[in-house]
Image (cartoon, rainbow, N blue to C red):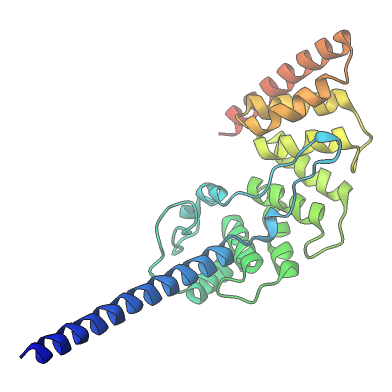
Length: 256
């Protein structure tokens, strides 16, 4: 009887240890898969900017821009998942096909989202050159997010040779429409003298406008530029920044 009890206790202990191993193994697998998924989803061709030369920094692409694509103008298209906290009930391939049809009809929001799918390789082969193609088509229609991200493509040499002048061109277009991240990047370009002659007054103006537009990340750039200006130059730059911000806000109000 005593031997049977010892055997039963031993068997129970073995089973318990086995169950613990199973749970630990499962937990490790789940964690590993989650880490792989997070690593994969964190990749984006538009996030390779970020200059620190002379202390100036630039804005990176943000997935929250997907909220502003106004896909309701694209009949039959579903809202894109990023920035919404919701998952689509359709496959990436199906989504890409829908965007492609609308993009070929000239729909700028669809062109933009299709570009981002090619950038990330979602439902289509990852291809920066194709992403650049669709971004350009949307940007040429004045689609502000496409202008900003096209500037980043040129800035980082993704799908095209790096070209600071082209980066500045597209940053400026988006900045003049009131896009704060583009305003910050344009100010940084003036501060670093990339694609434009170096100008601390212009760096201050555009960095200040970015801050006034809500981009707190441009505060450091503004302050760096301010330290390079005399009191008189700073006073003029502050006035120019206020005038530029007011001009952009007036233009936006008229266009809306």
